[in-house]
Length: 380
Image 1 (cartoon, rainbow, N blue to C red):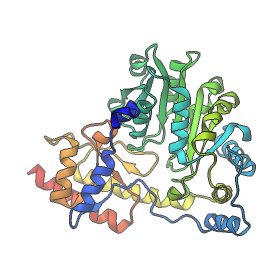
Image 2 (image 1 turned 90 degrees about the vertical axis):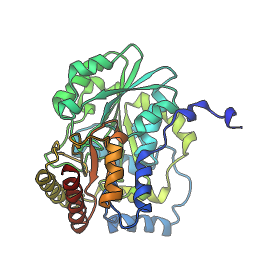
Image 3 (image 1 turned 60 degrees about the vertical axis):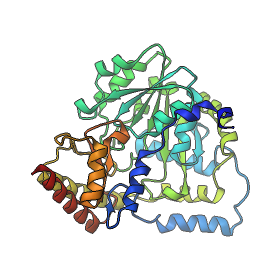
């Protein structure tokens, strides 16, 4: 019966990230610096808010787009912290940013459309486009320190372009798109019927001031959707809570699909998210900042070139000096060096590897010691 199933599924690529994580687990003595998940527990007040909601019997159906108090809290938070003005009825509470992104792309893309994906990029965008029977078109940013150049962007936009996805801070590079990059996107899509879907899930985890967003351009208001998550800044990955922001008319249309995708997210968790928005993630950010400094210092000593990340919790050093692809490099590193990193090929960027610093200082020290020994062995 497989031949009777949706043919779009046959074009989806299984996650190579998970494949390398599995290989690391199967290898005795191997440790991993691959996980893109905070190593902190969810803050206690957030957990307590969910417990209180359960004790009060808040276990019933709620509005499809989310509790009114949560949507009001999200609206206020975005306005006060990021200068983005979206009314509560311009918010859809989603099952993490993953559903927010898929909902946005499902609502935009038609068969035959093209989605511009600046690379390096998290694999979700391209695979979601394929499921919508659209075509991902990749924009390589490795030559411009992971920023978007106007001429390069213009070269990949065609009459079939329906949207461009932006991820800033970026997974896997940690790069934050500067104003020139955002201006390039603005100028390329303004008045052309091209959407931008902004994946901003690492926005609270930055190290050089508040990052800018394409959503700040008011003349693009009807063309921009912003996906956000509670997972990264408040260590809530297992809660699966996020939200989507957009112009009222666009959100109203997307809500038609959302109501049949998930009905709504869990009521007690929504109460917890109200609490999270009032909880300062600053202490976690400072821990990541210190870890980043240590990892960058070690990579410099090892001699691996890296663009200094300004956000998220990843570094993306180049391993292009070695006569092998990134998958072979990471496979050998697991088997010979006892350390798992993620190949750049998983993100559409050959010649790089992703290292996550969502690990204790002791784990980072041991992992980088192993990386240093492996690099030394293959250089000589």
